[in-house]
Amino acid sequence: MPRVRQGHARHQSKKRVLKAAKGFYGPRKNQIRLAKEAVVRANVYSRVGRRQKKRLFREMWIVRLNAACRERGIRYSLLINGCKKAAIELNRKMLSEIAIADPAGFDKIVEKALAAAK
Image 1 (cartoon, rainbow, N blue to C red):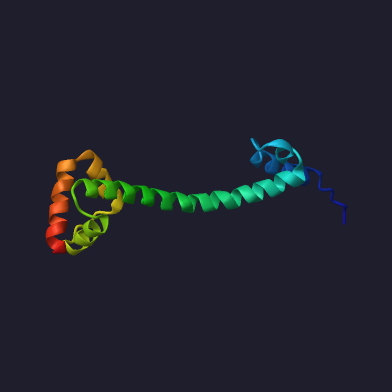
Image 2 (tube, one colour):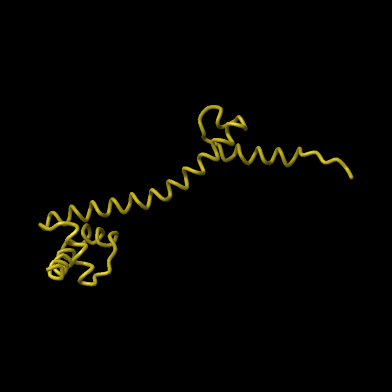
């Protein structure tokens, strides 16, 4: 059985890691051992970041809705409760977009929600 050297495979493996570490600071971009650790850590954080992004957007929509509700003299929780009771199946993203783009339409939604909440 012939002896197989790993020259090409090893080179490709290192090349792949260093390409992924492109743009990193200091020796983390060109020293293979540090680059490998940095790439693994970056992949972990990127996955966490994708989850956090969803949370942050939902937070922003709630803040927008709360501000729009306060302008109309009601609480955010009362609006959401009223929407559920009135069977208004708009999510927070759409409600916040309506509050910004179409204030008159949002006023109607608020009226229906208030009527259903009482």
